[in-house]
Figure 1 (cartoon, one colour):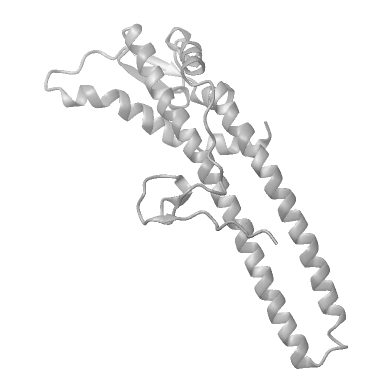
Figure 2 (cartoon, rainbow, N blue to C red):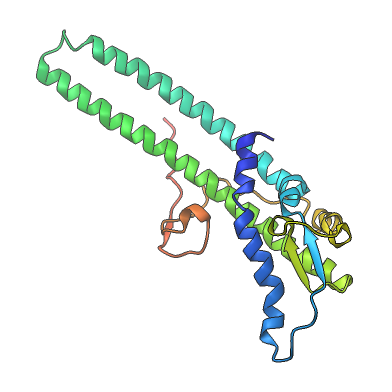
Amino acid sequence: MNTKTIARIAMLAPAVAVFFTMAVNAPAQAQSNPAPAPLIGVVNTDVLLRESLAAKSVMLEREKYATVYQNQANDISSKLRAEDQDLGNQRNVLAPDVWQEKAAAFQKKFAEAQGQVREKQERLEYSTNQAMQEVLNTLRVVSQGVASQRGINLVIPQGAVLSFDPAMDITSAVMNGLNTRLPSVKFQDPETIQVPTGPDQAAGAGDAGGTKPAPAAKKKQ
């Protein structure tokens, strides 16, 4: 797993902290009786989101698409560089107005290529976020189940505490449960997934602002 992939997982940490804290505390807050003494369980969410079978399956699929898209981008870049060089060589050969027309057409083509590459990346990130959200949802359910079995009423991510008694660590039990309950995640094809067009698009949240349809399939020549 490369450093970029690890960095993407690390970016989930703040959301995970809120995700766990709210999920566990909500039932207690809804009760009018005094809150019970906290019985704490600690979960290493970084490890779970990196080493669980489901998380690994998500990142494996992501890297497959990323490799294909990178190769496509490299191919487009090479062709555009060659076309740009050819255009430069024609500057002193063609009439100024003809050359300006060709240059404008090239700039349009270049901008369109950039947009296509950027859209593929956005779709890939959205597919990844959707898949990882399923991992997070299952992680919460499994953590609550382990906590219930052990009489724990508060589960917090390890990154939210400075130190703790190792006996509080329930990561291993949660990992086993997560691997059993969700050994893999279906990774939606970035080419066909419906992507929200609202401000939450990058986070992969909600349906606000409508959706961006998948690109129309190219007709075979």
